[in-house]
Length: 221
Image 1 (spheres, rainbow, N blue to C red):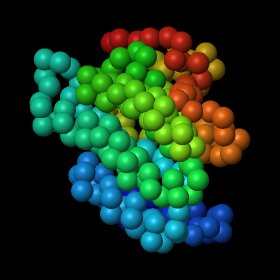
Image 2 (cartoon, rainbow, N blue to C red; image 1 turned 90 degrees about the vertical axis):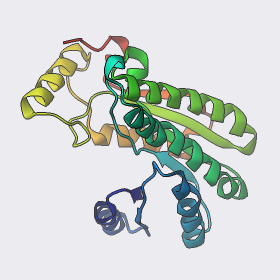
Image 3 (tube, one colour; image 1 turned 135 degrees about the vertical axis):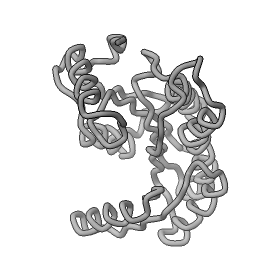
Image 4 (cartoon, one colour; image 1 turned 90 degrees about the horizontal axis):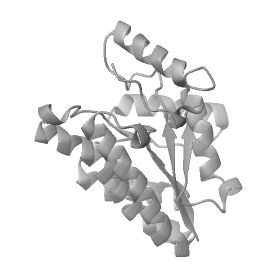
């Protein structure tokens, strides 16, 4: 697990190790820095000798409206949400090829269908394009590339006042056919499926973990 917050990554790795009896490694990394990709994957190769699945889950928001775009913020959003997944996939290729294949899962967002803040929406739409392109290019190597596209989740990723966050949550509940918000566990289940051999003939696809909300536009207000 790689995260900008090294202590949090270590805590989660410890929890996973204790709960599932597996070996874990936590790496503090600023994935918006392109210099991190190759050393990060190299550390995994040295520790485990192989890489079967890469999950690109790091992300950030910013640059919300076209009239207010700060170019530095725009570049920072794209660096983490789109460039980092590309560089990590590139760095992972030798290990996955040596293992006879693998799975890459990119965490996108339903906003590629509905639109949202220009920086976040553009980067997540680009991530869907990257997913499909890599699926075509890496298929001959038996490397599958898919994406999950969650809806709004009540997690620390979303920034704002408690009142604004609750209003947003209620708006999403209202137009979601299943009538509730998604959870991190919902998203994790889809990722685990795509990473597993049960999805061995699925590539270039997008699983919408949205309770059906991908069928409706995001309410404006």
